[in-house]
Length: 506
Image 1 (cartoon, rainbow, N blue to C red):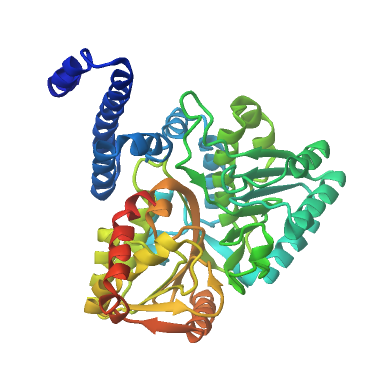
Image 2: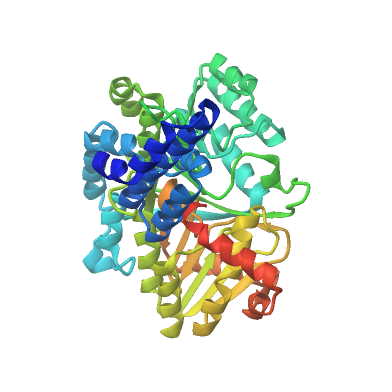
């Protein structure tokens, strides 16, 4: 590397030595910027997970290093290496706990038999991706929109007797945030242990007084700490996008809602707010709990204390849901995974569809492999529908979505835009028996940069409920066609293409 840098910059350096002082300083800074740009470009080419991302970063770093280099140092990393290293050393995963839980699941005949049950098209594959088992005797309640979701969450919290685990990407100090705080304070004063985890970037406007009030009541509350660790102070590319609430190890809530008044439909522009959550009971709750515990151990940094005290005091003995034999799988994904777990998960679901594939996401920016899988599904005769917002909260992603209309239409993939407010739910429906509700969007950030969690259910009755919900959403939507892009003015099409080029680094 040293020889290479000297070979291309040696002549420029000789010129610098004979320049006036001011020109010398400016030239030296330009020289340094290009050197740093070159070094960063090489790193981006070697480490960026996608070829599009590597090309985008490489060209930017070599062409505009004084802008691209700081941006790359902040946003360019694609692997959460510290979390990954600690996980490999066995300090984050709950190996012993999950082994004991798996034994209990086997004893109670709560594990699925992939050969006999065929709950999902590729059960063993999905379990390998999740590193968690698919379990039976679960139940799931579909929670449509914010009022239903938070009424159910607060009611479950009010009944807590042992502990409450809370994890959100966004926590706001507003009316909904105050309501959450008051419920947690009341439970803490009643002797219930409460643990709160939030993403410091998503919750950047959360007030210190809100946090302090919880801590004074004995509630353990921590940011996820993506910037913890040597050399990571400016690492802002990774987000913990998970939204999880667990009560007593009996009930878990997962879905698209964060804690903010806009999720109750009080946003000044993006209203009404359309979102979906799910309440689950049964042995899959312990699997959701594993995801929370890993994130908590990373965030607090006091690994030995949690391994010997708080974590072991959680409920790791699953309670089967009464009168339900639903098969469920918890799929946590993130940038510390050995594989691109989220991408592989979505690819497998798409490839397994034989009749129907309905995907709902507020951010639809698929990479080529996901787009090809959608096209192949449509060519197989699958009813492929994509539902995205008509009213954007992120302009760049909104523009990008237009670029896929022509490719979608060529193969029969139908795209709809939700016209009644802002669409934020993350839901998939596969055929007549499988449905997914979670936190992952259909974009590069969720596939590769965010910590996400998705709940997958094999149950015909639940799938019918999801289908009815989505049919109502389609009724409030309009189908869009390629002409909205191909017949648009040149300036609009140019913006769309530029936005799509930037998709790998959005």
